[in-house]
Length: 121
Image (cartoon, rainbow, N blue to C red; front, side, top):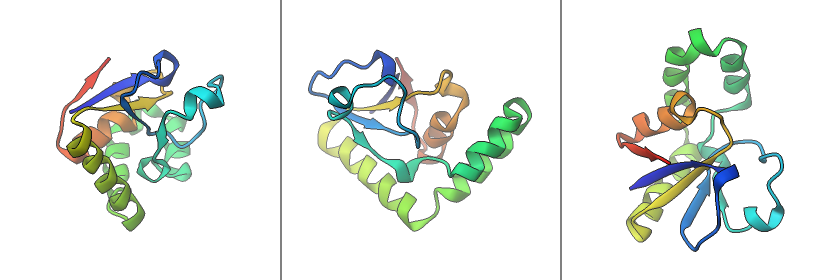
């Protein structure tokens, strides 16, 4: 099972936590971040993020498609395999993000790609 939470609400408590954004989150201490695994290869490329942010309302459907294409790459597939192995090993994996609306971002597109439902905390 995967649960999604904004990193700003995250309190380290021994759970398996994975940060799934490309950029380091502002205001998060290194001590707090040290308890989190960072999977940069599972995030959208810089070019795709910049394109999406120019017009998120109109680009979201196309973003999903383009992001899913990126997730077919070898480094992305390796990151996905690692993420799925963490779920098998620990049961629940907390996916952390800094985005304000995870349900309308790469987070929901990732859930769709994996064919799973994320629980949004």
